[in-house]
Length: 214
Image (tube, rainbow, N blue to C red):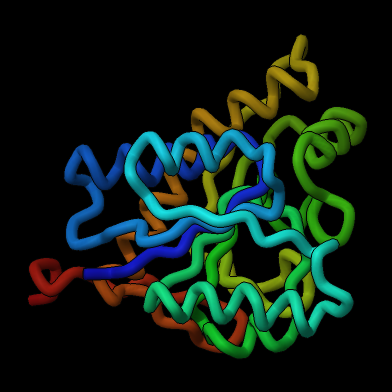
């Protein structure tokens, strides 16, 4: 059983996508053992409660240093014996202590096609505003492994979404979630659970299923 620790900061729509994928049978032998929020008012905590998932709020401002915050997060996730950390809209910064504790075992969903509209300051609706201001015709979402540099880890999956002429940041954000984020995040978890992700330097190679190998 792959034990998932899902980290959130807001509404938790990507958390819900994971929950739905488990309950539908798409994700086999996967279980969300804890949800960690950086905000007390995150609706994601309500979603967790509705599904009987243990949840907690661990706020950066409650700790004097980033190292102490890292330690609190690590201690909680280790308590639940988490195998894979899933950042599903987690907006708090983590440090070296946290990253090193889970090497190639932290994944993040980002609302753009990395390396476009990513890095420090690009979160929430901001990448969608930037995409519209730049005038791109295609945007999307990316799932990647987390490293110390924001949005720079090896890319696991990407899915494109076409921009419409009458899009606003809000309509584009909604469509990117529906058409890309909610699909590729569960898919990346599934690939990880099947042992099919091989990190080779900055790249991720997706291994074939045994049934595909002659």
